[in-house]
Image (cartoon, rainbow, N blue to C red; front, top):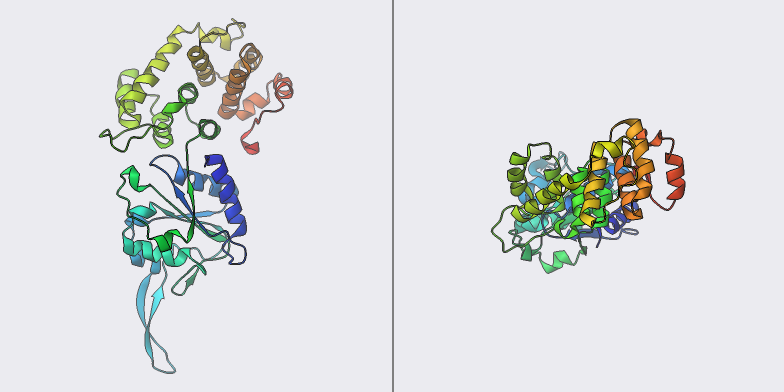
Amino acid sequence: MRPSHLKQVLKEQLDKGSNPDKEFGSLFVWGPPGIGKSRIVEDVADELDVGCIDFRLVLCDPTDLRGLPMPYTNLKTKEQSVQWIPPDELPREGKGFLFFDDFPMAPPLVQGAAYQIAIRPHQLGPYELPEGWVIIAAGNRIEDRSLAHPIPKALANRFRHIELECNINDWTEWALWHNIDPNIIGFLKFRDNLLFSFDPNSSENAFPTPRSWEMASRSLHLPKGLLASVMEGTVGKGATAEFMSFLKVQTELPDINEILNGKNKDYCPTRTDLKFALVSTLAARASGLKQFENLLKYSYVLPKEFCVLLVTMMIARNEKVIAGCPSMDKWAKDHSEIILTKRTI
């Protein structure tokens, strides 16, 4: 399932809540490491302004969920018993996602504690899950070699199961609004097969995933001599070699400042790699109202796909500045089918 489709499912899940008469049932999201399972749940919670309590079950003991036993004496009958005191982390009100991440990595006893709250009526001893909260679990598959324990069939049958896949268009939309460097966006649009490349049999510790590219984006301010080493330790040697070659392609471009300052208005490279390099470089270096206005006018020279990518990158960088450009209204009318702002995604 694509990330954008999973977001729709999560929103529908939350809308139904955990009321036994309406709920869809608890959801289990499967996928290889780094593909974005956790991030999507967190993003939906942020977008809807609801809670997201992340229980990393691999770090938990059974008592971390069930709570601690405390002796109790009935004052009338003098009968003694044990009462369980649930942990403070469990939700008591409101709505949101109770998220059991890395579920398959948890020991069987911890999985058993999670099993009790994941099934109807969503109780754990004296604790009851509020109806506005839903259970989401996520984890890597056994074939991913991530030390995953098999999920008992009785437990697995209590979940709806979804396998998440990478999608370059969904990732690009996400990256544009999460400050991912335009050079990385441009590169992965050009080499989309490198957004995710995972071989569970490889001995290499670093490999390209949506998560590792996000980390790599924060390193691009480093000097190029140091950048290559840091990138290799983030996305792997092969992806780094191709990305560094992409950056070198930018040296084949004409003076970028001339385009930013309204000159060289007709330049459009014929090679696809140069088009992606041009768009990412312009978006990364544009500054101020005048340059944004010049790029809006210049964008018409580019093929439509690159025209839209350039302007979308500019909007993501500074929506307020581009909204003040005199040519923005005309550009928006000419491309009325395009989603332009973060608020409308």
